[in-house]
Every structure is written in C-alpha cells, then in structure tokens.
Amino acid sequence: MEEEKQKLLDEVEPQTLHQQENISIKGQSARHLVMQKLMPKADSRVIVLRNMVGPEDVDETLREEIADECSKLGNVERVIIYKEKQSDDDDAEIIVKIFIEFTVVKGAETARDSLNGRFFAGRIVRCDIYDQALYEYNDLSG
Image (tube, rainbow, N blue to C red; front, side):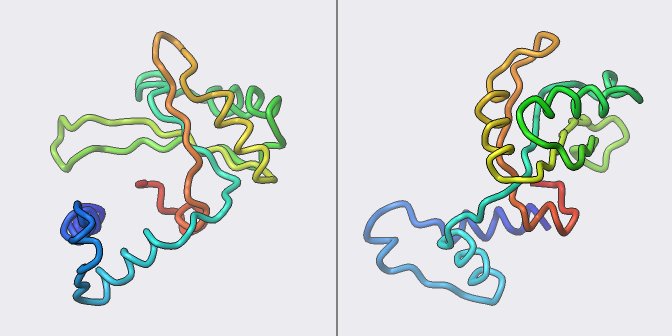
C-alpha cells in the first residue's frame, strides 16, 4: 500500500512550473493523495524517533527509560516501540521506530527540537513530528 502511494505521488509530483500549472489528476486515490499534500499539516502530539536503537537493543526497560527521559520535555501519554521488517524475506532488515505521544502539541514540538540530531549509544537520532491521523489509525508505517 505504501509503495502504491509513493508511486502515485511520484507520478503526480510535477517538477517544473509548467507541469505544476497543467497537472492532470486521474482516479480517486491520486486525487486523495494530492489533496493531502495540498492541505496544511495538522498539529500533532506525536513524535517518532528513528535510529535510536537496533532491534537487539529493545528490552523490557526501554519503554520506561524513554518515557522517563521524554517526561522532562512534556507530559508523556504513551510510548510505542515498533519493530518494522523492511521486506517479507526471512533475513530482511528490521528497523525500530519509537513513537511518543504527548498530552499537548507543545510537548511534541519541544521533544523534537531537543532530541533530533542527538547521539544515543553511538547513533544519531532522527526525531520528527508524526502525523496524528496516521497514529490514531494505528498506521505506524510512515
């Protein structure tokens, strides 16, 4: 599904001003994706941490450690540690995404600004605001 979305975006993503002015949209899915791109992003109370830990580093205390650390930046409502397999192959790479839901948007923004680019266990952490609607629909693939 995600590959189909990206393919549609690639197909309808105009590169030149002339292409942008003469864009042609076909089908319900393409129209929906274009509308999502045109709409301003809604405020979100959720951040996603990438490249913080590998799958071998996930243990029973990690969630609590992250919640404790992030609670210094805002009131944490929930922490989800999500292991995402990159393909259906048995030996496919697994990446770990950590989602932190704050009670208010300001907490998520403060955490993003504080955590993005930090070093943790020899890794550079990437931290972004995560789409609230995707999070609420349990879509952690973004």
